[in-house]
Length: 158
Length: 138
Image (spheres, chains in turn cyan, purple):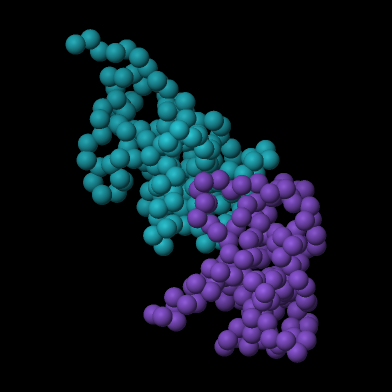
Protein backbone atom coordinates (compact mmCIF):
# COMPACT_ATOMS: atom_id res chain seq x y z
CA UNK A 1 0.00 0.00 0.00
CA UNK A 2 1.58 3.28 -1.04
CA UNK A 3 1.92 5.83 1.71
CA UNK A 4 0.43 9.24 1.17
CA UNK A 5 3.09 11.88 0.97
CA UNK A 6 0.75 14.71 1.82
CA UNK A 7 1.94 17.00 4.53
CA UNK A 8 -0.10 19.33 6.62
CA UNK A 9 1.03 22.24 8.74
CA UNK A 10 0.40 22.37 12.43
CA UNK A 11 0.87 25.14 14.97
CA UNK A 12 2.48 23.83 18.11
CA UNK A 13 2.02 25.37 21.51
CA UNK A 14 2.76 24.55 25.09
CA UNK A 15 0.52 24.01 28.07
CA UNK A 16 2.55 23.38 31.17
CA UNK A 17 5.29 21.06 29.88
CA UNK A 18 3.18 19.39 27.22
CA UNK A 19 3.31 20.17 23.53
CA UNK A 20 0.07 20.26 21.59
CA UNK A 21 -0.65 20.97 17.94
CA UNK A 22 -3.53 22.46 16.02
CA UNK A 23 -4.01 22.32 12.28
CA UNK A 24 -3.09 25.78 10.95
CA UNK A 25 -6.26 25.84 8.89
CA UNK A 26 -8.14 26.39 12.16
CA UNK A 27 -5.91 29.20 13.38
CA UNK A 28 -6.86 32.72 12.42
CA UNK A 29 -4.34 34.70 14.38
CA UNK A 30 -2.26 34.83 17.52
CA UNK A 31 -2.69 37.69 19.94
CA UNK A 32 -0.62 38.85 22.83
CA UNK A 33 -2.31 38.50 26.16
CA UNK A 34 -4.46 41.48 27.03
CA UNK A 35 -6.85 42.37 29.81
CA UNK A 36 -9.84 40.06 29.72
CA UNK A 37 -13.29 41.15 30.85
CA UNK A 38 -14.63 38.51 33.19
CA UNK A 39 -18.23 37.48 32.71
CA UNK A 40 -19.80 36.88 36.13
CA UNK A 41 -21.08 33.41 36.92
CA UNK A 42 -19.47 31.78 33.92
CA UNK A 43 -17.64 28.46 34.36
CA UNK A 44 -14.02 28.75 35.57
CA UNK A 45 -12.47 27.87 32.20
CA UNK A 46 -14.31 30.72 30.49
CA UNK A 47 -11.91 33.52 31.24
CA UNK A 48 -14.19 36.16 29.74
CA UNK A 49 -14.34 38.25 26.62
CA UNK A 50 -11.97 40.53 24.74
CA UNK A 51 -12.42 43.23 22.15
CA UNK A 52 -11.15 41.87 18.86
CA UNK A 53 -11.30 44.89 16.56
CA UNK A 54 -14.82 45.74 17.59
CA UNK A 55 -16.10 42.21 17.95
CA UNK A 56 -16.61 40.32 21.15
CA UNK A 57 -14.39 37.25 21.36
CA UNK A 58 -14.97 34.68 24.11
CA UNK A 59 -11.72 33.48 25.67
CA UNK A 60 -11.22 30.00 27.09
CA UNK A 61 -8.46 29.05 29.51
CA UNK A 62 -7.17 25.93 27.82
CA UNK A 63 -5.24 24.91 30.93
CA UNK A 64 -8.32 24.84 33.14
CA UNK A 65 -10.22 23.13 30.35
CA UNK A 66 -7.69 20.31 30.43
CA UNK A 67 -7.70 20.06 34.20
CA UNK A 68 -4.45 21.94 34.77
CA UNK A 69 -4.10 24.81 37.17
CA UNK A 70 -5.32 28.20 36.04
CA UNK A 71 -3.08 30.01 33.58
CA UNK A 72 -0.72 32.57 35.03
CA UNK A 73 -0.06 35.26 32.49
CA UNK A 74 3.56 35.70 31.48
CA UNK A 75 5.23 37.46 28.56
CA UNK A 76 4.90 34.23 26.55
CA UNK A 77 1.19 33.78 27.17
CA UNK A 78 -0.82 34.07 23.98
CA UNK A 79 -4.38 33.94 22.81
CA UNK A 80 -4.84 31.79 19.73
CA UNK A 81 -7.91 32.83 17.77
CA UNK A 82 -9.53 29.71 16.42
CA UNK A 83 -12.44 29.12 14.11
CA UNK A 84 -14.60 26.34 15.49
CA UNK A 85 -17.11 24.46 13.42
CA UNK A 86 -20.16 23.23 15.23
CA UNK A 87 -22.98 21.89 13.16
CA UNK A 88 -22.81 24.06 10.09
CA UNK A 89 -21.85 27.22 11.89
CA UNK A 90 -18.43 28.67 12.48
CA UNK A 91 -17.69 30.55 15.67
CA UNK A 92 -14.54 32.30 16.74
CA UNK A 93 -13.03 31.52 20.08
CA UNK A 94 -9.84 32.58 21.81
CA UNK A 95 -7.73 29.98 23.56
CA UNK A 96 -5.15 30.97 26.16
CA UNK A 97 -1.94 28.96 25.90
CA UNK A 98 1.31 29.23 27.84
CA UNK A 99 3.45 29.81 24.77
CA UNK A 100 3.25 29.36 21.03
CA UNK A 101 6.19 27.44 19.61
CA UNK A 102 6.27 27.14 15.81
CA UNK A 103 4.57 25.82 12.73
CA UNK A 104 5.68 22.34 11.78
CA UNK A 105 4.95 20.20 8.74
CA UNK A 106 3.88 16.69 9.46
CA UNK A 107 3.56 14.11 6.72
CA UNK A 108 0.65 11.75 6.96
CA UNK A 109 2.90 8.81 7.79
CA UNK A 110 4.34 10.52 10.84
CA UNK A 111 0.92 10.83 12.38
CA UNK A 112 -0.31 7.90 14.38
CA UNK A 113 -3.68 7.31 15.91
CA UNK A 114 -3.83 8.24 19.57
CA UNK A 115 -3.80 5.34 21.97
CA UNK A 116 -5.37 5.39 25.37
CA UNK A 117 -4.42 8.60 27.06
CA UNK A 118 -5.18 7.50 30.55
CA UNK A 119 -7.53 9.67 32.48
CA UNK A 120 -5.93 13.06 32.15
CA UNK A 121 -7.32 14.14 28.80
CA UNK A 122 -10.52 13.03 27.22
CA UNK A 123 -9.54 10.75 24.37
CA UNK A 124 -11.94 12.32 21.92
CA UNK A 125 -10.09 15.63 22.29
CA UNK A 126 -6.98 14.22 20.68
CA UNK A 127 -7.17 13.33 17.01
CA UNK A 128 -3.76 11.76 16.69
CA UNK A 129 -0.19 11.78 17.82
CA UNK A 130 2.35 13.41 15.57
CA UNK A 131 6.00 12.52 15.58
CA UNK A 132 8.51 15.30 15.20
CA UNK A 133 12.17 15.02 16.16
CA UNK A 134 11.49 11.87 18.17
CA UNK A 135 9.00 13.76 20.30
CA UNK A 136 5.34 13.05 20.28
CA UNK A 137 2.94 15.91 19.87
CA UNK A 138 -0.72 15.72 20.69
CA UNK A 139 -2.82 16.92 17.79
CA UNK A 140 -6.02 18.38 19.13
CA UNK A 141 -9.44 18.00 17.69
CA UNK A 142 -10.34 21.59 18.47
CA UNK A 143 -13.81 21.41 16.98
CA UNK A 144 -14.46 18.93 19.76
CA UNK A 145 -12.53 20.62 22.58
CA UNK A 146 -14.16 23.98 22.10
CA UNK A 147 -17.48 22.81 20.70
CA UNK A 148 -20.41 24.76 22.00
CA UNK A 149 -21.71 21.67 23.80
CA UNK A 150 -18.40 21.21 25.51
CA UNK A 151 -18.37 24.84 26.55
CA UNK A 152 -22.02 24.93 27.53
CA UNK A 153 -22.61 21.63 29.28
CA UNK A 154 -20.33 22.05 32.29
CA UNK A 155 -22.00 25.38 32.90
CA UNK A 156 -25.44 23.87 32.82
CA UNK A 157 -24.39 21.12 35.21
CA UNK A 158 -23.49 23.79 37.73
CA UNK B 1 -29.13 54.41 26.38
CA UNK B 2 -27.51 52.80 29.35
CA UNK B 3 -26.19 53.63 32.77
CA UNK B 4 -22.54 52.79 33.22
CA UNK B 5 -21.65 51.28 36.59
CA UNK B 6 -18.59 49.68 38.07
CA UNK B 7 -18.82 46.39 39.94
CA UNK B 8 -15.60 44.89 41.31
CA UNK B 9 -13.53 47.07 38.97
CA UNK B 10 -15.35 45.80 35.91
CA UNK B 11 -17.62 47.92 33.76
CA UNK B 12 -21.26 47.07 33.37
CA UNK B 13 -24.15 48.78 31.66
CA UNK B 14 -27.69 48.81 33.00
CA UNK B 15 -30.31 49.75 30.39
CA UNK B 16 -31.69 53.15 31.27
CA UNK B 17 -35.24 51.97 30.57
CA UNK B 18 -35.03 49.74 33.64
CA UNK B 19 -33.57 52.37 35.95
CA UNK B 20 -35.85 54.18 38.35
CA UNK B 21 -33.53 56.12 40.64
CA UNK B 22 -29.94 56.27 41.76
CA UNK B 23 -28.77 56.90 45.32
CA UNK B 24 -25.43 57.59 46.84
CA UNK B 25 -24.02 55.64 49.72
CA UNK B 26 -24.42 58.51 52.17
CA UNK B 27 -28.16 58.23 51.81
CA UNK B 28 -28.20 54.50 52.33
CA UNK B 29 -28.59 54.65 56.05
CA UNK B 30 -30.42 51.54 57.01
CA UNK B 31 -29.39 48.27 55.49
CA UNK B 32 -31.13 45.26 56.87
CA UNK B 33 -28.88 42.39 55.96
CA UNK B 34 -31.19 39.80 57.46
CA UNK B 35 -33.98 40.17 54.96
CA UNK B 36 -32.09 42.32 52.47
CA UNK B 37 -34.14 45.46 52.79
CA UNK B 38 -33.30 49.11 52.56
CA UNK B 39 -35.53 51.67 54.23
CA UNK B 40 -35.59 54.72 52.10
CA UNK B 41 -38.12 57.54 51.69
CA UNK B 42 -40.43 55.61 54.04
CA UNK B 43 -40.28 52.78 51.60
CA UNK B 44 -38.90 49.31 51.94
CA UNK B 45 -36.83 48.31 48.96
CA UNK B 46 -35.30 44.86 48.69
CA UNK B 47 -31.70 45.01 47.55
CA UNK B 48 -29.23 42.77 45.77
CA UNK B 49 -25.57 43.41 46.34
CA UNK B 50 -24.12 42.88 42.89
CA UNK B 51 -20.55 43.23 44.12
CA UNK B 52 -21.19 40.21 46.31
CA UNK B 53 -23.23 38.37 43.70
CA UNK B 54 -20.56 38.62 41.03
CA UNK B 55 -17.51 38.08 43.21
CA UNK B 56 -18.94 35.41 45.44
CA UNK B 57 -17.65 37.02 48.59
CA UNK B 58 -19.43 39.56 50.75
CA UNK B 59 -18.45 43.16 50.29
CA UNK B 60 -18.25 45.72 53.04
CA UNK B 61 -20.75 48.42 52.37
CA UNK B 62 -18.14 51.10 52.21
CA UNK B 63 -18.11 52.98 48.93
CA UNK B 64 -21.23 51.79 47.30
CA UNK B 65 -23.93 53.43 45.33
CA UNK B 66 -27.19 51.88 44.39
CA UNK B 67 -29.41 51.81 41.36
CA UNK B 68 -33.11 51.25 41.89
CA UNK B 69 -34.63 49.27 39.05
CA UNK B 70 -38.15 48.22 38.25
CA UNK B 71 -38.84 44.51 38.46
CA UNK B 72 -42.41 43.49 37.72
CA UNK B 73 -44.23 46.42 39.39
CA UNK B 74 -41.77 46.29 42.26
CA UNK B 75 -38.63 48.23 43.00
CA UNK B 76 -35.37 46.44 43.58
CA UNK B 77 -32.12 48.14 44.53
CA UNK B 78 -28.91 46.90 42.96
CA UNK B 79 -25.79 47.78 44.90
CA UNK B 80 -22.78 48.64 42.77
CA UNK B 81 -19.41 50.21 43.44
CA UNK B 82 -19.77 53.43 41.47
CA UNK B 83 -22.12 54.92 38.94
CA UNK B 84 -20.34 56.30 35.89
CA UNK B 85 -23.08 58.15 34.08
CA UNK B 86 -25.08 57.69 30.93
CA UNK B 87 -23.72 56.32 27.71
CA UNK B 88 -24.96 55.40 24.30
CA UNK B 89 -24.34 51.69 24.08
CA UNK B 90 -24.26 49.56 20.97
CA UNK B 91 -25.28 46.10 22.04
CA UNK B 92 -23.11 43.30 20.70
CA UNK B 93 -23.92 39.66 21.22
CA UNK B 94 -21.67 37.61 23.47
CA UNK B 95 -21.94 34.59 21.23
CA UNK B 96 -23.11 31.07 21.73
CA UNK B 97 -20.63 30.30 24.49
CA UNK B 98 -22.49 32.54 26.88
CA UNK B 99 -25.99 31.67 25.72
CA UNK B 100 -26.92 30.32 29.13
CA UNK B 101 -25.76 33.55 30.75
CA UNK B 102 -29.16 35.09 31.26
CA UNK B 103 -28.01 37.91 33.49
CA UNK B 104 -25.78 39.35 30.79
CA UNK B 105 -27.66 40.21 27.63
CA UNK B 106 -24.66 41.35 25.64
CA UNK B 107 -21.62 43.52 25.64
CA UNK B 108 -20.66 46.93 24.41
CA UNK B 109 -17.31 48.42 23.58
CA UNK B 110 -16.40 51.57 25.45
CA UNK B 111 -14.53 54.54 24.08
CA UNK B 112 -11.21 53.28 25.44
CA UNK B 113 -11.66 49.88 23.81
CA UNK B 114 -12.60 48.11 26.99
CA UNK B 115 -15.65 45.92 27.14
CA UNK B 116 -18.65 46.60 29.35
CA UNK B 117 -21.19 43.86 29.88
CA UNK B 118 -24.84 44.81 29.54
CA UNK B 119 -26.97 43.49 32.36
CA UNK B 120 -30.50 42.25 31.99
CA UNK B 121 -31.84 43.46 35.31
CA UNK B 122 -34.99 41.34 35.18
CA UNK B 123 -32.89 38.21 34.78
CA UNK B 124 -30.44 39.32 37.47
CA UNK B 125 -33.29 39.63 39.96
CA UNK B 126 -34.91 36.41 38.76
CA UNK B 127 -31.70 34.45 39.13
CA UNK B 128 -31.16 35.88 42.57
CA UNK B 129 -34.66 34.93 43.66
CA UNK B 130 -34.28 31.41 42.26
CA UNK B 131 -31.05 30.98 44.15
CA UNK B 132 -32.65 32.17 47.36
CA UNK B 133 -35.59 29.81 47.03
CA UNK B 134 -33.21 26.95 46.37
CA UNK B 135 -31.10 27.67 49.40
CA UNK B 136 -34.07 28.00 51.71
CA UNK B 137 -35.46 24.69 50.50
CA UNK B 138 -32.26 22.84 51.28
